[in-house]
Image 1 (cartoon, rainbow, N blue to C red):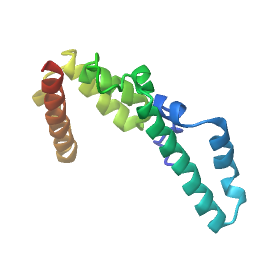
Image 2 (tube, one colour):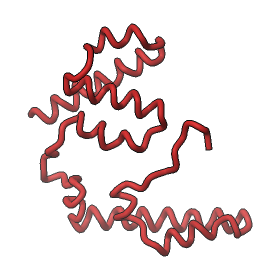
Image 3 (cartoon, rainbow, N blue to C red):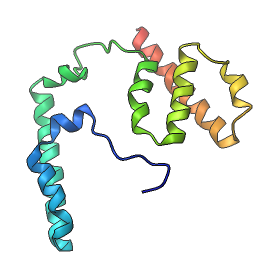
Length: 140
C-alpha cells in the first residue's frame, strides 16, 4: 500500500451486497493455490453481483438513496463530502477544496487554479464541468 493511501473503507453498497460468509471466503483466498484463488474470487464477485441485482430488484436501494423513482435530496457538494473519506490524502484535499468552492466558502476557482499544476488545473476544470452538469440535472 502506498504511504499516501488509507485502508479501504466499506460503503453502504458494500454492506448491502456483502455478508460475513463472503468476507470469510475473501479471508481464505491467500491460503489457496492460484487456480483456486481465481475460481473463488470469481464466485465471490458473482455472489456480490447477484446480491446487487437482487437489491435493485427488491427496491431496497431506496434506503441508500439510490431509488430511481426518487429525486436525490443532496447537492453535488454533499456528494463530494460523501466520497471524500474514500480518497487518499491528496484526493481528500482536492475534494474538500471543491466542496468548499461549491458552497462558496473559499476563493473563486480561477484564483485557486494559479496555485495548481497544469495537470491539477485540468482536473479542476473537469470537476467543474461535472458539477455544473450535475447541478443542472438536480435543478430540473
